[in-house]
Length: 60
Image (tube, rainbow, N blue to C red; front, side):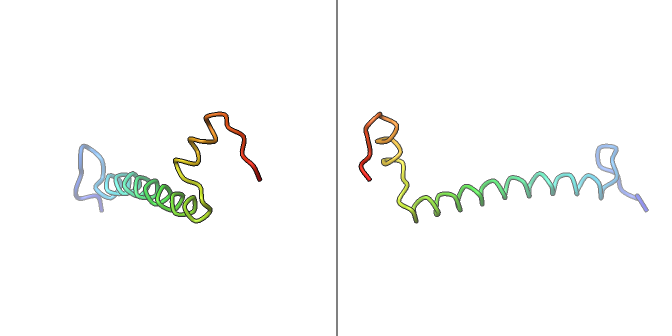
């Protein structure tokens, strides 16, 4: 069944390992984009975070 090898590994195993890495990277980008959209929806942005981290008190 293992007719082809890539760098000494069966082709199906090698392609599966590469696909897992690519899928992980795609999920990282998707997570970052979704998190940014949620932050924007609730009014959290870089300017707001900078003001909070500079030690100023926020009024509710």
